[in-house]
Amino acid sequence: MRRVLASLGVYGFAALAQVYGMLIGRTPPTAGWALLLLLAAGMVTMVVLARTPAAQAVSEVAFTVGQTAFAVWCLALAYTINPDVRGMLLMIVGLALVHGAFELPARYCMALGWMSVLVLGAVMALMSHLRADVFDPVVETVHFLFCLVTLPTVAHLAAGMSRTRVRLVQQQVDLHAALDHIGTLTTLDELTGLPNRRHVQDLLTNSAALSAPAHRPLAVCLFNLDHFHRLNDTLGHAAADEALRRIGSLVQPLIGESDVLARWDGDEFLLLLPDTSLELAQERVACL
Image 1: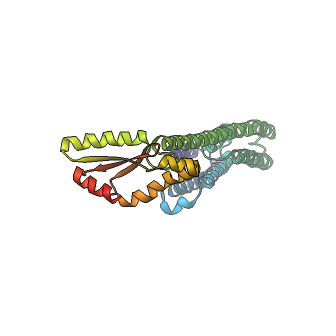
Image 2 (image 1 turned 45 degrees about the horizontal axis):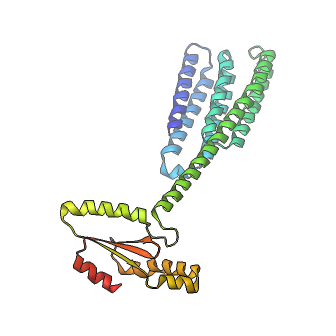
Image 3 (image 1 turned 60 degrees about the vertical axis):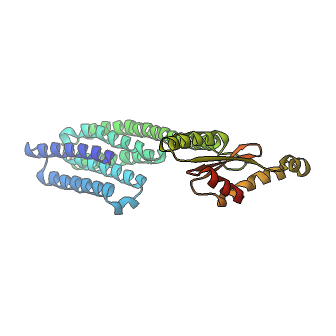
């Protein structure tokens, strides 16, 4: 929407300039009003597409391609009816192409650049043929060469900006994924998927800080597996690891929603029971 508003500012300035050209007699009124109506229709359409929920199905790429192509065609029409300032209009085409770098893939930037060259070249050839007295063929040739050199270059720069933007976005995605993975490693035990010792220590500190001022009970149970080392020695590490993994699935259904089961160390596990007295904690642990 910010890009749409920026575009509307440019279109608004162009409309005022067009009105001024009509007032001083430099632009034919019929052609000038037709261009103004086209600009108004384009601006309304852009706002509707940017703000109406039903129009959000239009992809960002399609929206930006349409917006840029519309700008180029409007400038081409303005070129035919404003011969006094037609050279200045060519610079605005470059501005429209740069606009695509913020959303379009690189190939679309290049395609729009060459489309601009072809559209403006066709307009220059047509006007120099129909009105050679105003659109001097020599001047139009120079203008076309200017477009042929500058517009593909601008499109190429916009494509480079687009590639850089895509690369930065991907780097951000990869960075967030790496941070999420690191966050998981720092809070969960890799073998059992339960909260690890570091994370449960933080939970224990926070729970104690909340319970003490309100005089609310807080129970902590530390337990380990019987004969774990014998299991490890007789059946191997894989069986021992599977036994540790089973703890979560066996104990978790038996504890409350606010309780926390965590792996403490080796075959030791910690059960954090907020708002639980010693007597109640003993009863609940006995059920395990």
